[in-house]
Image (cartoon, rainbow, N blue to C red; front, side):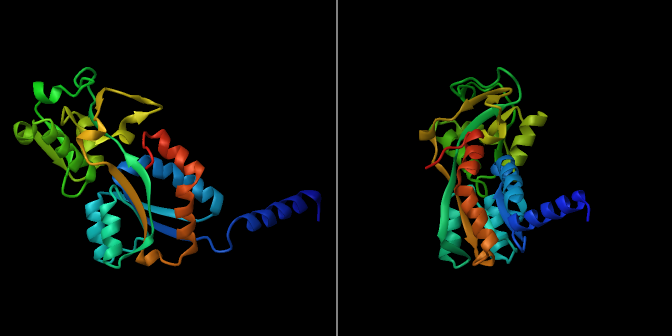
Length: 251
């Protein structure tokens, strides 16, 4: 055997000692607002462990219904803390595994520069036809948007201008495409390299219920070492650095 064959054989042996003997696929239901950070976190987790993360992104309310109907998800990364708590009480998730992986921030955003002022006064002044909002019955960020408008006393006035989106991703798309001049989205969706294009108002936290986003292991993921490894990774410094870079806080 020549030297090059020996070296390749040694590298292959080392690779198998680093990666787990049985790399597994982990099915994760992820709140739509957490799409970008989760893609980065999953990629790094896969490199380090050899496991594969199969992520589905959508509204927390829809995921709840799917999980109750037997969807094969093993982890839920919700956009609230109420849904995971409810699933645990109903026996569909492991309560002891629940933790807050991020605290979200709400922003009123427009793709147009100068439309949204730094104090959110545009909501009272008007000058727009459509305001995009994720379905408040399914999406916590949509509910937070409604809370904000009610706190400011403008909800009744603006109700006819609201364009209800299926989830926060669709709400963002309506605004980005110009189908709605402005709307409420997650800060994580519009923050890129520490900057926000267009115009925006970071909604003060006292105007809406804190958006505590909790993770939990579902019944189908119970006792799975790969699932537990991902949950542990989400609590680690590398994942938290990514989460923080998208404007989230920690409780």
